[in-house]
Length: 453
Image (cartoon, rainbow, N blue to C red):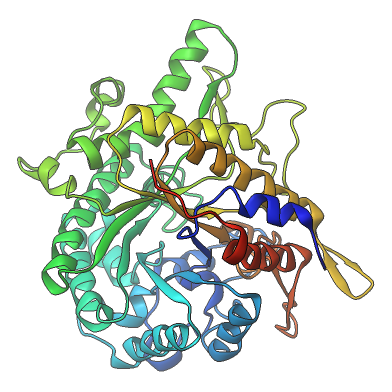
């Protein structure tokens, strides 16, 4: 398959741009009780009636745990240069204290296997699978002690893997941990209490700061960052009350986390809006949270619409949408990156997740997913536009390598560029994967060598 558009797109990115794919442990690994792995809050949540759309769980998922070598070989065949994966905390510390050597050994094999195939590992320490003991005994992330335990866990992994892994992300999307898990209750652990959720958001950020210190104490050459899910939030209308609510929601999603991480404080207008539900930080917490970042990961999927009567709507009326009902708007992606560049003194950025769920079609023995391929192409042009305007973006990771357990949607939504037959677990690269592989080949020869802004 040849596509001249891949070559044209490759020319818009510098030669040293990092290209990769991303996954997370609970969504693909399976082997939920293998080799000493303990239970997580997602194992518990999946057993709660009605929480998962198809009644499934990540107990088996893609069985990546037992198919590791084959999946790494698949990445090599596709020419993937970098792989962003998460580490399951319950594999490393099943009860949150003692180290499970069999769990560490799995990630040793993963990292060594990547490096043997010329693929650079990018490790995420927390992608929502908190060991159950913390939630059962102390309220999970609502307990400040969990933040300290996370720092201990981070230090262990930096010491054990940091001779080969040079990039560590502390948290993936703390907004999701806090808001979907502890306020709306639609993600694990299923709590619905706003004040608790805000304290959780603070404790996650605090744990990031402590973890960054622990990682650097173990490995001075480690690159440390955090990943945020960020979206532009547009008012539902030009009515003053809609504009005010959109501003508040932007404060809760974007400014709450970026102000804390980059400025060492929370936005005053958001604190006023939250009132007695605002978190209760310690005296030095602001400085602890605002540890220097070597990079900031940005996960982008779609813009949001919000107003006094309609909040967090994922698409404007009449806009094209994905299978998730999320609006397709690459222009908003560029606008988001330019806004971040304008409003903050940023570390280098990585697009750590970007992708789309669509229904796949089997055509002449191949998995046809042109809408997904087009989504990726349009959003990569959006990144290139931001690069052209001076935003320091260093890399891009497609979400996701494999179709997988899509949290509360179970197996009903497919984000992968590689199709997974959930009966046989056979992997089949889709049209989008073949196109991405062609783009990566073109980048080796077509991408310019140019100075960064």
